[in-house]
Image (cartoon, rainbow, N blue to C red; front, side):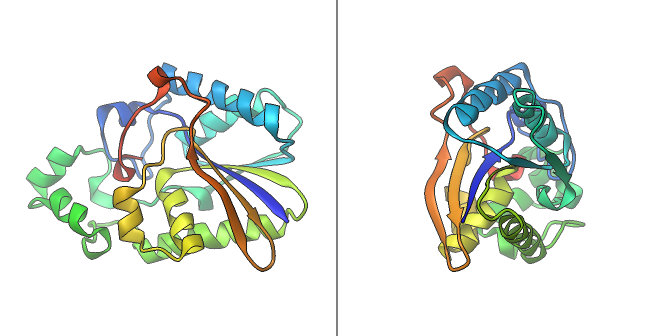
Length: 216
């Protein structure tokens, strides 16, 4: 069995500005660094983490660095396969800018994301396969270990849709994944058992920040 602690990155400047990130990046905010430190304290109080995997995008890896600082001997793997979906021409824009420049594209996306391809973006099916296959590989190579994976809201939603055999559009539009929230799973050769989703009880009320997947 592999225990997977899957974490969304801490709050970034683009989260605050409500801009679409995808593969673009912005620095963690002071609140985001505080979120990461609170998360680290909780993780190492309750779990014996043996390896850390992180998306190579700056907002995720900066979150990882804050966590790993407490235990610098834990191996850290910086992995581009754990990136958020690439959102093409919309990256860096607000929802309002997308609607103005792309014929209400964001409003159309909100009705059914998989039916609204974004110019120049990574196909959603390809993105989902990339994330699921990488997590399955991590689980296989870490049998008997507790592993921390720092990634993105869309990536976590893709995993949950696969594990729960749920509709991706329904989850992406209705499931909240908070900054530095924990999704905890145990994976064996035969099944995945989800223990919690979007657990952010380590954060105080002022450290929460609401946003949607497309801004991650």
